[in-house]
Image (cartoon, rainbow, N blue to C red; front, side):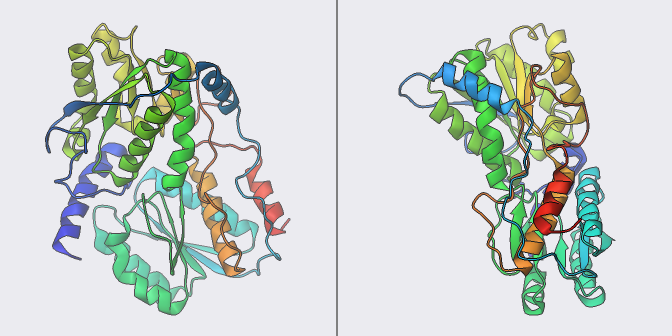
Length: 391
């Protein structure tokens, strides 16, 4: 592992403790492109462009549609035949809850088709254990495919030649931008998923603010997967809401780890009374924000929305103290990981946009259950099995 990769991984370890999951990160020294510094919390205002006003009525209609729970999985083409039984899928599982939830989905999918499922645990804070897990899987388990989540490819790129030579595909998930090519066959819940999640949130902003919202965008760009999502969201605001304004609040991983996110948000809101929305890259970054806004006397003017809610954020949306989120479906992602594997084995090309997980806009008006893992569409497991031609 190179010196730069080791430095980047030290950033990852620091960030995982704050976010509660293993996430891809860029180098510690990087900063938001709209930040005025490389350390601490900084805010800068980004223009959202010019042009005609936002179409508020169209946005409101789109919001109503997005509030409906999805009923169909995101793939439609059936396999050519039922998969053969007795194959083995190896899941490299980090020591965070989200990795376990995704792995549980892969396990259920493997059981549905009569495959063996093996877990090789590794420690997110020790990249050597991930690399050794990859090597163990290839040398000892005769895998049909191997999957993992959250860890950037440059950390484990040393194993790619061996996997390519062995003809064993790797399915990545939640790793941020990743080139697809032998042996990496898919990136589930990558940047394409963020595109699908961003538009409903932008439409909600347009409809709720009548095209004039001023958003404080809380960024932690050292987390690569979230930087890509935030960039997509900011571009969508520029495109769909030219009368809106975005102020970036740039934070480092130590800021997020050290519990500095919420105080920095409150300070930014006090400095600029025109800000009336807070957008977060991940709900786990803003624990206790509604109470902090209330204590600061700004709760009545500010609304909270963003990507990837925790169960606490989902409960807050239900109660009305937070306003809008698009959730992440970890167990579904596990089934999609298996689906990518089966299509690869039958030489079925993955369709454009493959890797997106179900999208629903959670607002107080939407019908949803407060849960830690998004369980939609109802019966998605049976829909996958039907495509796979298994009972």
